[in-house]
Image 1 (tube, one colour):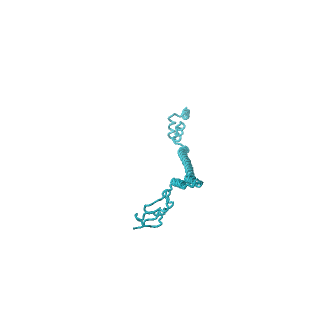
Image 2 (cartoon, rainbow, N blue to C red; image 1 turned 90 degrees about the horizontal axis):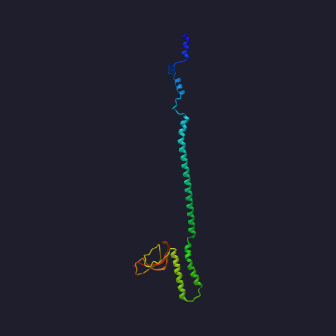
Image 3 (tube, rainbow, N blue to C red; image 1 turned 120 degrees about the vertical axis):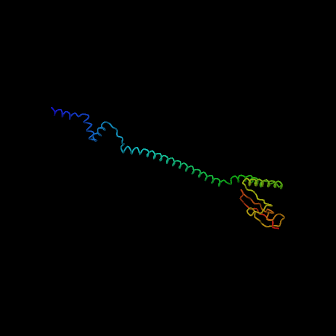
Length: 204
């Protein structure tokens, strides 16, 4: 009878006996807690690597987008610069090609007057002189429109850059000043086309 009771106690352990076994075997206790659904607080290495890779991928994508935008802006600016350079070259070529166009247009009335004078059979010298004076005024106006101005420096101080002295002559005026102009000089926009031929007052 006693053996029967011992076997029954060993086959049906009490809660106190189960706790004692778990305390004696930590591995079994951990397994038991895991079996009861205790969550694992540590992430796997794969999860950690994926979490670290996501911000890096986003930063890389953002940098690549910025690089693409900068390249597009550079190509656009380069194209605009090339267009400006090409237009500038065309404008310069046109300016060189047609620079004399306005000046030539202003000379056409002078040509018309000269042709009309040659076709006139009149023997009236006064009328011929009047026509010549008119033509001269037209020519002078055309030159002035082209910024060509005559130099007539009588009484001015001699300037070797604008005047060419033929001789020095005795005169009542100050020495080294222009006495007479033998041939007018001309300048275009302050640049000498031809110096004036002059005589200069000699020192007293």
